[in-house]
Image (cartoon, rainbow over all chains, first blue to last red; front, side):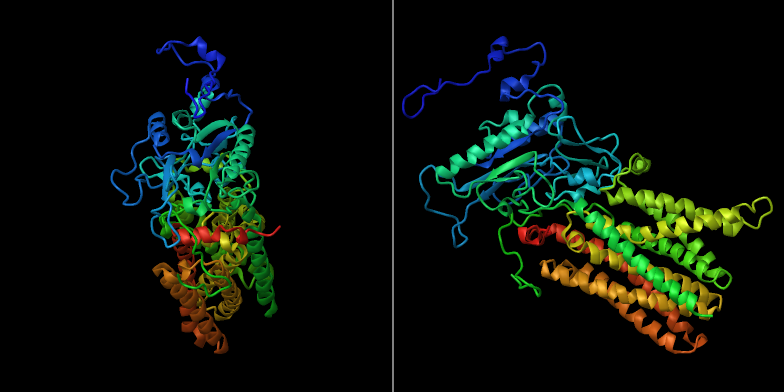
Length: 309
Length: 325
């Protein structure tokens, strides 16, 4: 058992059901394994998501690897981007978790050389599909390939997608991407197959610091609020949530993000839009303005055509 | 950092290593731009055909017939371009699985279906209505004129809503102005095509009427173009000004060739006697058609550019730009 700095023994929480599986090798999948790994029972009809606490991220990229392994996704690019430790670059059709690395800069724009002990000069953040409450990709999809699952997540059905590509510009976060090889749209499924089998999503299970936490969205939201308060008290003034209901990142009618984040800097620093909007809100204004124009010009045309005798 | 000509300076906050925060639409801009142009032309030609038929059934018979024929561009070439642009084209029929009112692409699919069906009926009435045994096609064609005209009006402008209902900054910034611009450009292009056909048949008086409508539409388009430009500048979206596509297609193509030149030529042609104005009018009509195509490809190209520029996309997604409730 780990010993804390004060010398008292800290008890490690072990789910009572874990004692039923003492062996290293199992015959099959443990029923509701997520209950043992993250204390969450996965049941259809409930809302599941990720809370990604960037203050805990150490940039190990285990989430990226676990995601690629479970979902059998090929490498996107092999080589160096030439910036920071981020050689992944961003989310794409084949990369559904992306760890961003931002080196903090001093006021003059140069690297900070003086830092308090044990403070990191790096911000690290594991980005992922936000599984928006009002998901713009889903609302844009003309085939119904994108749908909302029984776990309140947003998934592309690969056997239906016809590669029209409309979900790609619809996404306010630049997440959805087309794979030119198979001509279909791809993005994080929040491990739909694992959820069906009672397993915690691969990235969250692999995360060694619990920077990525999987669970029921209301539970995660409450936990995140408490974490922000704790960090504020510890002096992390910039700690705030991105994607909480109607808050930053969930503006303009998006509702809330099922995969939300705790950030310590402005969202733009991580490449996230501070005030995204729901594109479907622009359908009616566009259509009505267009039809009004047509009606106006039609009346003009009728007057001109009918006027001459 | 350059100062924006509109209110407020451009975004100069942080970005993630200047990497894009959005993904551009994976559309082939020429193919999709071509479809938007053809849909606008075909849809509005059908609308004008119905209006001409309503105004003077006898006098404008040829205009109506040409309009019906032009409408076939949408179900044939237009639909082919759409299917060609799919990345899994053999699944094009999956578009017909559902109707989704939040998706202008879904709305547009059904508008195109309705338009195609009713347009084919109008053409069948024109072309086959005199064949013995097929005379029943004439009343069918006439009955199809109204649904064809209404769905045609929608077809001529829904593409603007399709672009606006995305997160691409340039398209999302001005939904109303863009819709007015696309609609007016569609009307102008259909008038231009119909006017060319009337000039070909030496029917200069009808061509002049069509040129007058085109002139009115170009005036609306010009106003909408200025509104778009003002809005884009105010929001720090500069791709329409400082990219090659913006300069060539938007400034040169849509504004100069597609609006200023034909407005001048048409105005001069209308001042001259009907037969003498033939060349100027024809040239103006061709310019309208070219400009209308340039506008659509230009908007697609420059929109993609704003999606790829993090300063423009992050600057656009600021709380101050949220719609007021």
